[in-house]
Image: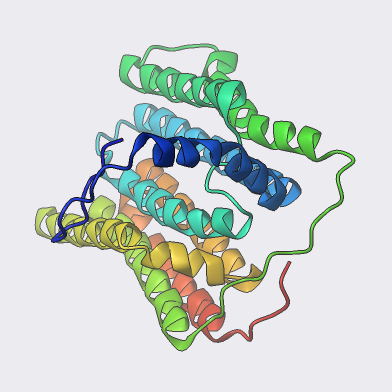
Length: 295
């Protein structure tokens, strides 16, 4: 067995054969403890939510592409708003998964089926966007339906495995600390800026659009760094329904601005300003909302 030393530390001596075998003998017990700890019913609900979110994501992309072709607009820069929402969700959802006992709820064949369905949906959508040919409605709806099936598949598997088993008590949230409330407000600022920049990029002149894109890149880099450092994952473990509702409504507002920016760029700035104000107000409330019970 090879050991990779920690940064700044000397490498450890390799274990002898007996110690290495003892490590391997512990694996079945580790897997068994994971099965006991994993909260399948709640993890299934999370997968259902992710399936709906992914289906909406594909639908918004295809709808924007259709509007772009009908209106003759050529800019696709407004799609960065989806990237911001997805990056935030990716980090936040890890916090939920850790509360439910595992970052990945399914393994083996079920995981392979899940990945194949989702990747096929993405590939299908990309082909439709880049080919640009007139296709029947069912062909354009295909990636959305496939994304929903792929997203729901893990939840169906976990619900099947949880059938008949006693439902465990709700795992506790992490304590909503004062820094956590500040980080919640910061997440709202990032989403608010995203909504505003989406309108600026579509409706402004070249200078304003470039400034907006720079702000967008800064937001994306900041989210990526905070996710890498674990800050956003910790925040996801703290959030309760009020914070998640604020996040969902903010994502919806950003999607509306994106669609408006594609259908009618001159009016996008007004929508962006309205969305930015609404998102900021939502997160002001969410950041000070009293912590409720675990669920």
